[in-house]
Image (tube, rainbow, N blue to C red; front, side):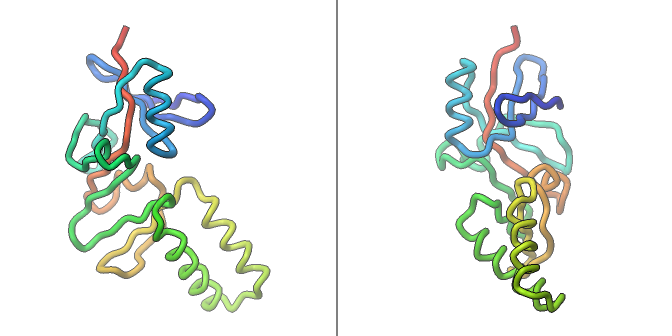
Length: 157
C-alpha cells in the first residue's frame, strides 16, 4: 500500500492487472475521482484482519451509494463519523467522559473537539454497548471484521 496525495490522502494498492484507490471521504469524492482518472467505481473488501484488498459486491456499497461499511458479526456495530448516529453516540460518550472526570464545561468542549477531529473515527459497539473508538484504517484489523470501502480501479499501463 502506498499513499497518494490528491487534495486528500488515498491508499493505493497495486494488484496484478489493476490499481485500486481507497480512502475516499464520501461516495461523491470517489465518483469524481473515477471520472477524473478514467477509472471505475468498485467495492473493495478487506477480510481476515489484513490489508489485502479484494474487489467485491458483498456490502452493496455501489447500489447504496455508501463509501464505508463493516460486518463483524451480529454482536458488533461500527458507526462511522459520517453516519447520522455518530454525533448522538459521540455526544453521549463525551457526557460520560466528563462525568467520570468531573471536568468543567470548558474541558468538556475540548474533549468533544478531540473526538470529532480524530482521523476518521469509528465508534465500536458490542451488544449495543460502547466498546471503543477506532479509526477507519484500524477497523480492518479488529474483531475479525470484514471492512468494505468504495474504491476506484484503474488499469495498469
